[in-house]
Length: 152
Image (cartoon, rainbow, N blue to C red; front, side, top):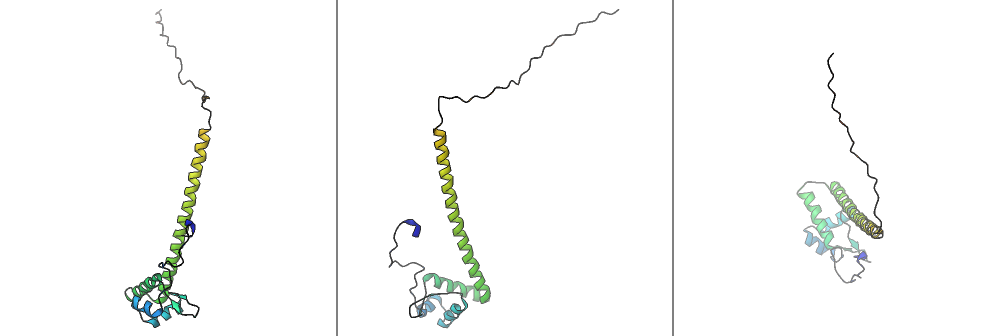
C-alpha cells in the first residue's frame, strides 16, 4: 500500500499484525506453547516481540505454524528441511514480487515509447508524398521468324 498514495490506518489489522500472545497462538495452531518457543529458537517461525520481550504472533505466523506442523507430521520432513522449504518459499515470493515490479516498469516504458512514436508520426508533414524509385521488371523481346533457306 505504500506506493498507492493512501495513508494506512495505524489501527487497521492485517494478516501481518502481531496480536496473538503465545497461549492464543498455540491454541489457534493446535500446538503446545513450548513447541512454538522451540520453533522460534530454530528460526522456523519468528514472531514479533513486545517491549517486554513477549512474543506476539500474527495470523500469517499462525498459518505458518500450521504449515510447519503439516510438513512435519504428515509429510515426515525434519525441521531443518522445513526451515529450508520456508526459506525457499520466501525467496520465491520475493522474486515473484520483483518480477511483477520489473514487468510494471517494462509495461510503462513500452507505453511511453508507443506514445512518443505516435507523436513522431503525428508530426509528419502530410503535404509530402514519399518517393520510391520504380524499377522496371519487364523487358522487351523482339521475335523475328527465321527465313526459310533455299536449297541449292
